[in-house]
Length: 188
Image 1 (cartoon, rainbow, N blue to C red):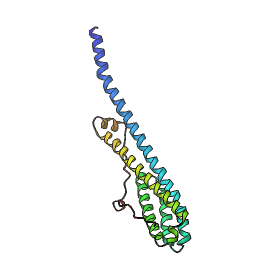
Image 2: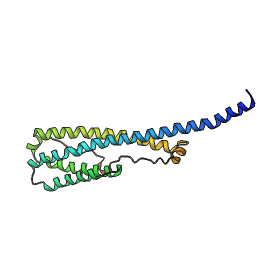
Image 3: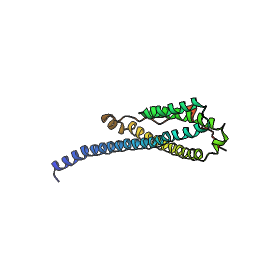
Image 4: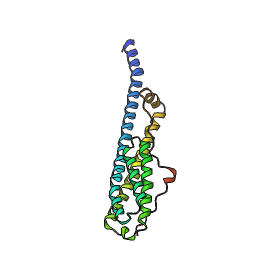
């Protein structure tokens, strides 16, 4: 090997290794960004299922508690706001509002024992409970992916690549502090 070959090999290593590292980091950031988008869409699917269930739930309760008009309006308004929300923050806020409205609706149900025994209502309540569990799991997964994505953007040397290619941190899907307690719903 001649001196020229050694210099070329050295230059190839000195230039090639950083380029390969940059490519690896960029691909990791893209993968994490896409994973966080996918995780968000999984939450959105479950939230939409819940929102789609609300009209059936309201109609079932209306049959027994027709005079509870403000409760039904509140639930309908919250569902409408949810359907217009676009960003993660807007969806989280709308979800919190819908959850609060549903708590009020279930509080009304407590006053109607015959409604609590209605088979259609029980099926809707069971389906809602299943959806809530899926939402909780999807939120946790989303927030875990967002944390990994955001951390990757902040550590060296990934932060250099993230800044060069304008990667932006994602928002966590958070619930309001007052909403952190699970609603107590007893249909017995």
